[in-house]
Length: 330
Image (cartoon, rainbow, N blue to C red; front, top):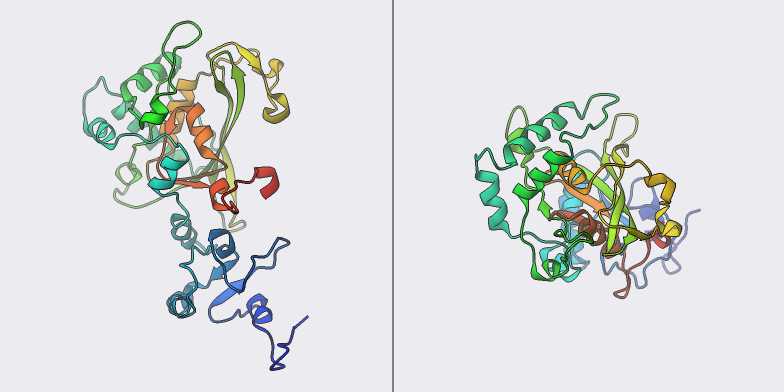
């Protein structure tokens, strides 16, 4: 139903925005949600309701400036434009520090990434990453752990990183007196492992961890990794790259089944270690890839993982400084 402007009797701007042709280079997708107050968007949550046509991007940008609309982080769902749009939603370093994300010290990573020392795990991880990138597009591809438990532990030890002080301070000894799990950071540059080289091929992943409470801390018990994998038939396609149960290092005192879905029988016979998961993630996720998730700082901390390109839905859709649960957002 077309609505008419009360004063002029012409078709209203809202009707034009939701129409197929849009209005001044913009379109609006009608959603059942609480619409923003006032007549213009004021933050990212509001701006996500706007889609900018690529053909009229420059014109829309000029008009937005004239209308004093805040700089848009609009999402274009067509082709590679999606990746460019997602880049605008990546958390800044300031926000990551404020939310206590694990942040590695860059000099450590650069030094490790340049070394050719055979005792360092970089060459091995690069080969594993090449194997994944070469075979990932194949139909029916299933990720295989590239290293066993002992190899994974040695690799993590050789690739450990130092983090921002607030994260380092939470480290403590294990129940058996050994040191807490080490942190690692994504470092592989996909442009260096692609054939032909220097071709940008950023991937988009989503990660989620289920945790249990042990005598020492919350520990990861299940890891699920999805990769955005569009096709001609489905532009929003994805695939499950990794879905593994993990054996916690310490004795479990609460399975938190109501929230985690983890039960004691599920973990019987599980031998996969945290270090195997860490090495697997380093083999799959490159430093310039984008990871999307809800309050990812919690997932990264139980995974002992640092990654700098993150889209956090808890931050993206917060209102009045308050984060909302994933159940509420969905």
